[in-house]
Structures are given as structure tokens and as C-alpha cells.
Image (cartoon, rainbow, N blue to C red; front, side):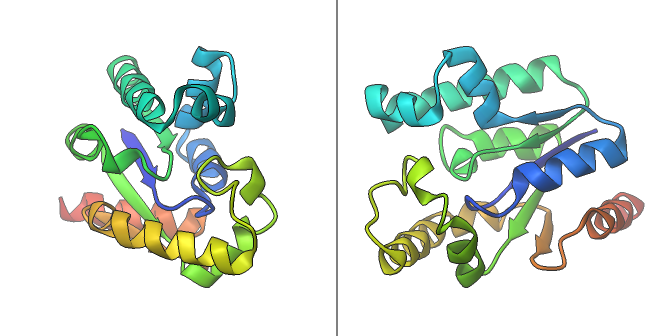
Length: 173
């Protein structure tokens, strides 16, 4: 089984993914962490020195490498991963994709303190600017996220809720 978690920055993909991997006894990977490991520098540094176009190409390459070598995993993708280089099609064809849907006010609350560490949010001056950027980003990405066969909405998206979703989905497949 391959389980892919998609959703906005701050949706909890990495946190939930680690817990799901433990519960499902699967290896866990965070796509951004894999990029950092391969590049030998932070995502912020990659964005700053090479730009977003380069980052999105590397993201697609690393995603394909992981899928090729890992027949079983839980993968926390980056927030934009499904939106570039036909990545969503790869996710849908090679595993089960779960969209972590988090309301905009909750994303703002979660990201307010850590926005400076995120390349696409770092230059925002205040909470209003953060909220506006997240609203704009979600509007652009929603059509990709909505294609995931599974959806779990915060705040009820727990390990137990996802395990129930998986069992229900697999029983109906």
C-alpha cells in the first residue's frame, strides 16, 4: 500500500503521516525532507538560490524516485506537489491519495508563527497578508486537492478517523 497525503501547508500532513505510518506499519517519508536530504540544503535555500521552477522539477524527480523504489509507504507531500508536473496523476495511479482539508482560519492560526520559515509565505508582513495568500493559494490548488479519492476534514482528522476511512474505502473497492 502507498498512502499519499496532500493538502495545504499547515494541514498536518507530516504529523499525521508519521502517526499513520506507525499504525499501518509502513515506512514514512516527507517529500520536502527527501529533497533537503538529496540537495544538502533547506527548501528555503533551494527556493532562494534556484527558484520555484527548479524546486518543482526536483520535487517531481524525487517523488518519482520514491514511488519507484518504495512499493509500500506513507508519504507527506508538499502543499504544491499535486499541482505541478502531472504529480497528481502519478499519485492517483500508484496509490491512495488522502486530502487533508483544513479551514482557512485554522491554517492561518497554525502557520502564523512559522510563516517566516516557509519560502512561499516568508515575505508576508502580517496575519492579513498571510490569510490573503493562503486564500489565493487554496483557490488555485483546490481543483487538484478535490481529485483525491479520500478526504479528511480538520479537526476530526485523526489516525483513527483515517484508518476508518481506509477500511471503508478498501471494503467498497
